[in-house]
Length: 195
Image (cartoon, rainbow, N blue to C red):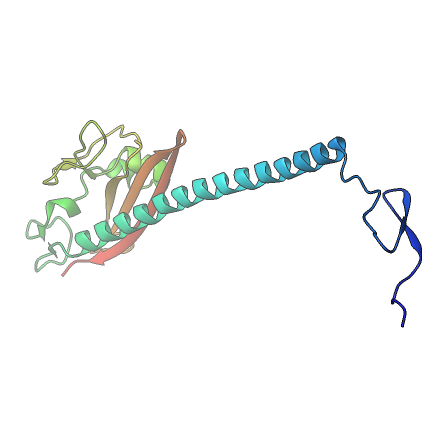
């Protein structure tokens, strides 16, 4: 019985017998090796830049999630405060029992809906230290103005009386921070009714 393949064929530009198919083959040239390494390096650089942008996106997402949670916690804390309108069921009738954090201290921002403006001139905020962290125990700032975003998260809120209807208050919580030199905001709003 003979072999399944017999004869000569060409490898590396030379005739080679089937007895030793690699004889006369000298491998890759230096130029071919350099081109392959260059292509491989470019592909690795592209993959590394993609991974860096993914890491940056994850960091930004983490800030948004943390800010959303902080805003929601603040809304829940404010909703749990005492808001009793008294027998006349009207805001400002003198018989109200309303916690300080729910009093509208500035009507100037009642028509504002822009998060940046609501953050800069809110009804309330908590005092922060030089690094931008809220001071513990929390110290309430009433009607602060000109607040600027910092690298850390900071929460503010504004109150609108008789909104959306008489006897209700709308609370706008805005959490702001700076990321890569640009201000970022997360806003949450809710309405509460007096008892």
